Amino acid sequence: MTTTADYTEKIPNNVSLHEDRRLQRALESWQPNFLHWWQTMGPTLPTQDVYLRTAVNVGRDGWAQFGHVAMPEYRWGIFLAERDPGRKVGFGEHKGEPVWDKVPGEYRAELQRLIVIQGDTEPASVEQQRNLGATAPSLYDLRNLFQVNVEEGRHLWAMVYLLHAYFGREGREEAEELLHRNSGSLDSPRILGAFNEETPDWLSFYMFTYFTDRDGKYQLGTLKESAFDPLSRTCEFMLKEEAHHMMVGTTGVDRVVQRTVEVMRSRDTDDVAGLGAIPLPVIQKYLNFHYSVSLDLFGGETSTNVANYYTAGLKGRWLEDRRKDDHKLTSDSIMVDALTEDAGTGELSIGQTEVMALTGLNTDLRREYISDCQGGVKRWNRILEEAGVRYRLKLPHIAFNRKVGAFAGIEASPDGEKLTAGEWQRRQGEWLPTDVDKTYVRSLMQPVHQRGKIAAWIAPPRNGINGQPFDYDYVHLA
Ligand SMILES: [Fe+2]
Ligand SMILES: [Fe+2]
Image (cartoon, rainbow, N blue to C red; front, side, top):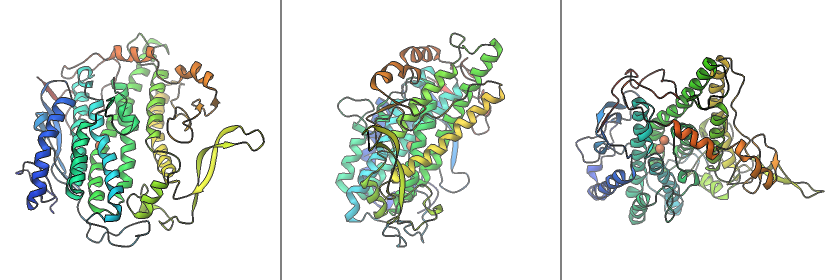
């Protein structure tokens, strides 16, 4: 294997694809299906070309190059991080053994499932975001949207490569299915709930890239620990690209908050609806929604499947090697969120319960994610503080608006107060975007496709892309 991609091939890759003609042919016959999917389900705004980065190398420095590219001609390729020949399994019952270059027969079904679930999210987000180009607030933002889209397409390639290379006919069938399921489709929806929600406006897009792409970061982080080395190396390189997606979300929300406080101060009012900015309480509602649906992506608080994945070495913990325990967890326990029953009254309340550490691994991962999410809130609140605004954003309680896990059957306020169904019905409009909020946000989404110009509801970015100025010609529209 080399670190530099071979661009003379139909499918750029650093996995010596030309040495395996059968695999190469199989992927080359999937390629037109992918392109058909991109043309029919990908970005709808017609463009000539876009200033995009393309992965060319997996090495530490200079792994990507930038240039104007016609999107259908983007070089989607297959890149695995460099192989560490001495790498050992870091956890579970195989801890200390050499990692696997092939799929062990006994774990085949589980590994295939993990790869399909990850693979399904990648094209889903492209589908969810396909119409956003028509309302982009600037060419800079438009370019970032397309960058995220082409890289999610490449992440699909990454998973399809694993399916084709290691899972035989079943893997090839799954690769086809990844193009046939579609976000929001009634007949064949995407596998996970959050990936069937639409991304109808740019505030949703920034929240999605902040909260939902960040879920992706944590899932990839656990797969990067896998004893199945090709999966580990694939995910390691995907994480590198993923960082930009989250930057788009973090700074996108920064800029919305920034613009809102500017309008609040210049007009000396909190009520900026009607003044072309997005009121802070509406930003909070969007945050509440995207955060709570992203929490659901981590699954139930306890899971025997995930315990088995861990013991088998298929999926580790976030930053497994930094954990100071035996990396087997067979005798450890963890407190997980739960509905607890009062022994006297039988009433259920929001609490915690102790379980085996292995079965509580979803909770462990969700907690890592939550503390990472706090970072964004802190940053946005600093903008409010510096502007002398009293309002503060916050993450809602873990039980708020949950559809998966211990709290799926109850309703709770963002402060974690348990509510009756009636109270929830009456009050959810205070906490989640209402039709009025969504209509207002959508009314602001007028396209600004002129070079160097920006929509009134968002501040310009501090920096351009790859050292280019904000008014660079990031996108040439068709
Ligand atoms: Fe991705
Ligand atoms: Fe992403």
